[in-house]
Length: 353
Image (cartoon, rainbow, N blue to C red; front, top):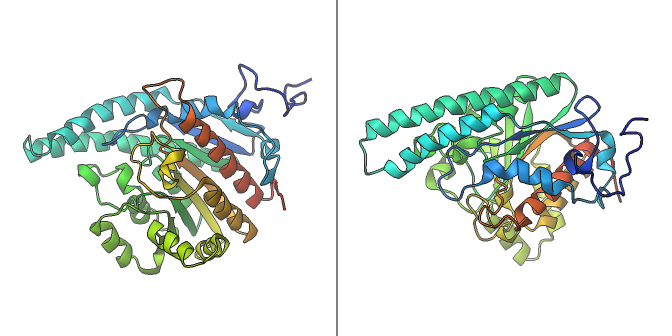
């Protein structure tokens, strides 16, 4: 009898089990996680390249019965092995990037620009890898889910979707707008991910941003130039609406109403209040409560919209205390919630009343 046939969802995770303690392989999974250990252009807090491993380990402590979606695990979930080649690219690119970041104002501009171009070479390799792997999963009928890593990671995935879909939207949870143009000289910076998506993936017809509270003038100008293509529900707007008596259910309805029928969810965990992710790369005061983010995702499903795939980024374990598993703990549970709602939107799991 196969391990899948004898799997007990109520039992503790086995030592050699897969993500969430599950026995599934890529072949028999409806949804497949692609871990991407990348944080090359990080300029503040580090550690997000260790996020996929930390989430994988923490996932084995997650109870599989979900109060929002019945039995997400039953559709089959599998996390692929990390690419050692990607990890090597990350180490090389990060070393170069740190020279650039630390050299501004101290070294000739042409030297720094040349180093930044070397980082871009590695970033392009990363983008091609994620695009190829995501495309392979899509062509095999799998739902792709990207686990970063910093927020530069999902560009390739969105390219892959864009080359196979005539149009779709992006629901973006984040503390930052990520609409900068080549931040710190890096074309594919984590701070430029949504700018790059809008520039390189014309199939993205709508970007709806939620929780934004750290933004520069360039990003506001760019978003304004995009017209109806970009809608921002920044943290100030959300908090003022709540303070004036609007229910969060009403806010969630307004957010979801801006989305097209098919969408990708990109979730930077710093979109949550930093008490949930204290070691993330760039924490910012304010943000969504965990339950508020969950409510928005639930509203997406109730509205009958389809989640094509998703990514979760910027989960960073506490590198100075291996016993502090809080960030990974929250990351694993958010990953399971994203998974459940994605599957429910596709008719592969049942939303509970």
